[in-house]
Image 1 (tube, rainbow, N blue to C red):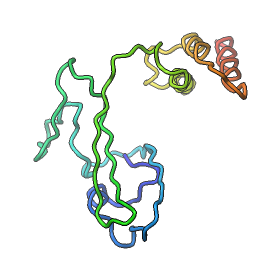
Image 2 (cartoon, rainbow, N blue to C red; image 1 turned 45 degrees about the vertical axis):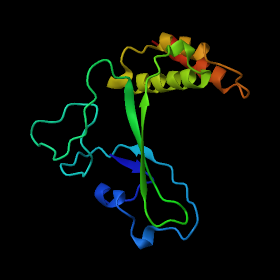
Image 3 (cartoon, helix red, strand yellow; image 1 turned 135 degrees about the vertical axis):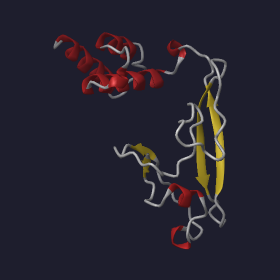
Image 4 (cartoon, rainbow, N blue to C red; image 1 turned 90 degrees about the vertical axis):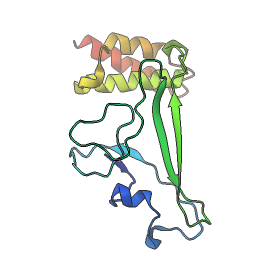
Length: 169
């Protein structure tokens, strides 16, 4: 998978030090990296071995990443950030694992709950297989409970849209 904002260099190339043409002369440039599904699977993508899933049997990786075992692990993902100081000439890799704190969804921030409702609504509209057990009434309930301050009235407008979609079914 590539990321929006990522160059077309190979992953192995991008984890090494960037060529002089890609170095910034003492200035900082922010580049957002958003997942970009390319729709194509590549055999030799240069990607690291899977950490949270069993390794495929066909090819044994020389240095497989440790697989997080069992239900006792609360680790959800690992954020990897490759960066370079503005005045530096070597890239550094920062790896930070993020774990589930075990909190209930109802205790999450209103922004997170509302964003979850919007995401679920989008998946339902597209008929996504990733919608799981989400339903329009469930989306409406989550959105209604996460309206928050809603300065511009956009959240209420979204809730109205969800309720109208419910009526069409």
